[in-house]
Length: 381
Ligand SMILES: Cc1cc2nc3c(=O)[nH]c(=O)nc-3n(C[C@H](O)[C@H](O)[C@H](O)COP(=O)(O)OP(=O)(O)OC[C@H]3O[C@@H](n4cnc5c(N)ncnc54)[C@H](O)[C@@H]3O)c2cc1C
Image 1 (cartoon, rainbow, N blue to C red):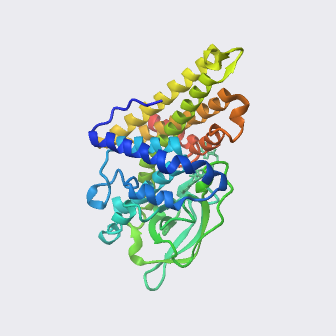
Image 2: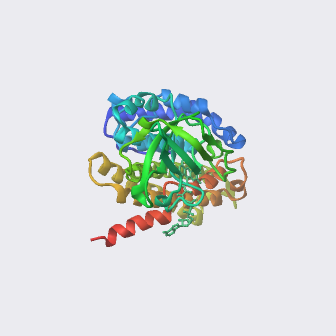
Image 3: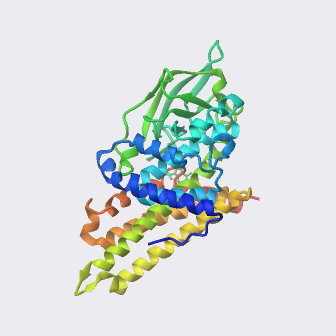
């Protein structure tokens, strides 16, 4: 089913066409196989990067494509409908570029063309084994040695691209307890003492499984502090505000794919001598799925347009993340139902999409945390 999109420019239409073509040619033929083998497709990421899709919302002068968020998110949505792990990779990478883009020193910002041009893949290291929701309580420590280097010790958990990234944003405690004691450091892959661990055995997104990272006296150059000392948590949250829009876009794309698949199956499959789509019980289910996906997209784009206009958008981003990811979970669950027994086996992609949808309700702030953010904004003076 073609989604009728109101895009702001002719260039944006071309970009969406390019993305669809890339999906058909490079992603669709490989997705099921890489997911089944649980192998990270570094070459596919490189192709996505060289097509210009890894730096879409950043300015051209930094090596990006200077696209509005509204457009970037619809590209993500399109990628997610073909291969969620690749859309999530683009979203996480975009998140990982934010600290250097927004707070990096002049020297750090010289890395942006490679980061945004697709040659370097990023990781965002905030969560830890003892807690993800209460990120301000993180325990990974960075202290200065006599040469001024930062020496990082601790363990990060669930890091997407943990084993494959070229650069890592590390949020570490450089001061006292709480949010103000946290700083952001930038480390290259291969920095001595930075040890990615075995990938997790995940329910979905198996081609891009996260891994813990152990920092064991990991020495990061003095000039790799991003922003000011103690500013790390603010930087982490700013990045997550926009990142949540990315996760919402992934959810809309996944929901749309599940809806399309369910509709086409229901038109073909016959029971009692008629296509199952003709039964009202099933037709109404499809109608609800379609309505939810459209509503999620509308909420997402309205938050994106606020961001593009330079208006506050973080609460709207939290609502979009919450709503769109809950919709993705419901719609993929219903898609399995529409296929009946066929939905429960891996011959059809809805089985994989159902497993994948779950993670979107968890990453970049669980949906309970989104509700916390939204409810606090309602009662704040
Ligand atoms: C596939 C995958 C990829 C990920 N990638 C990254 C990454 O690249 N970088 C990164 O830093 N992290 C990453 N994460 C971690 C993710 O952000 C955390 O899992 C998430 O923030 C939740 O943290 P937790 O798992 O420690 O759960 P916990 O914080 O232990 O929460 C457990 C449960 O308690 C609920 N809860 C906690 N506090 C409250 C509260 N105040 N009110 C109501 N309910 C509450 C939560 O909603 C959840 O249901 C990834 C996780 C997964 C699964």
